[in-house]
Image 1 (cartoon, one colour):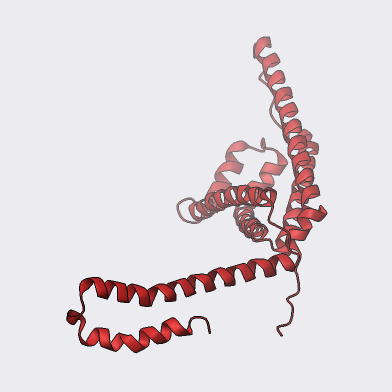
Image 2 (image 1 turned 180 degrees about the horizontal axis):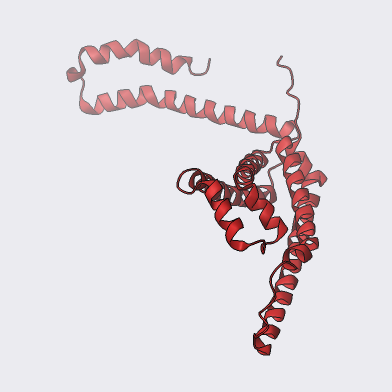
Length: 247
């Protein structure tokens, strides 16, 4: 072996150095030890470079595509968003199961509003505990999916595409449900000044336009990300290359 000679020389001369180190001049000791260890260190460094080069060459030879910055940036963005939402939802679940019991919160909201809240909000409040638990579970799953996407797991890519598709469906549904959400809102009192009533209607229209633009913008963004993740160059990053049998 290449490293056999330095190792053999070091082992052979090591007892002599340890037996009478004070009989060797300092300059000779440094040179002797340097001469013994230098080939060994150089041999190890050379072997490390060879092994590292072999690993890199084997990865290249297997045909695995280089990791794109697009997937990395998308994965880190959704990891940060889902990580933050997981912490917030975890805190809400703890809050509504310890300091603020869910039953008391439901009773307070439903009784005080007197049926003036929208049906969707009433359904959410009526099933507050289940909804918060489902949102927390979904956020954790999406966080795991973003991590799998970062690690170039193909199942993570497919599940990530599924969640983006569900996001598009939710954005479109939220636009269609606006009429049912905004209609139950109580109108201004009869004695309200005309200017205020006009301003209120304008604010409602601005809110509708903003929500529609928001939904369309994010739906387009999600569709573009899905298209990129389904492209051949990105799909190659997630391809499982079979390992060659060892000789």
